Image (cartoon, rainbow, N blue to C red; front, side):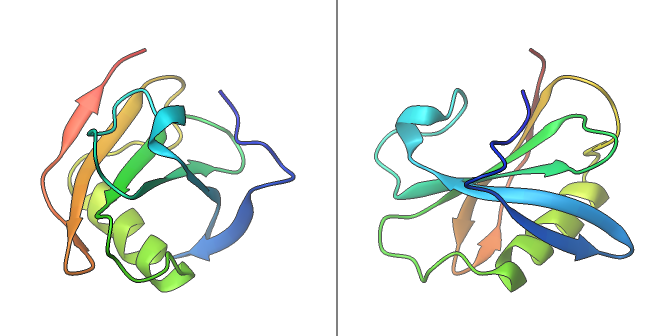
Length: 106
C-alpha cells in the first residue's frame, strides 16, 4: 500500500526520505474510533511497512516537526520502515508526544 503521491508530503529524517499524509480515521484500518485524525508515514524508497499515528480531536495541526518526532519514536520502538508489508501503529498522541505501540501484520 503506497501513499498517494498527490496528497503526500516528503520529509527527510536522519538522512532517510519519508512520505507522509494526514488521513481521516475512516481511511485507517488500525485507528481508534472517535479521535481527530491519523497521519501515515512510509519510507520513500524502498517502500515498506506503514507507520500510523493517531491524533486527538483537539490537537494542534499536524506539522513536519511532529511527524519527525513520531518517526524517531517509532524507530526506537521497533518500526522497520524498509521491511515490506505490515503496519506499525505507534498509538495516540498525548500533548504532541506519541504514546504506546502496536505492531500489526497485513
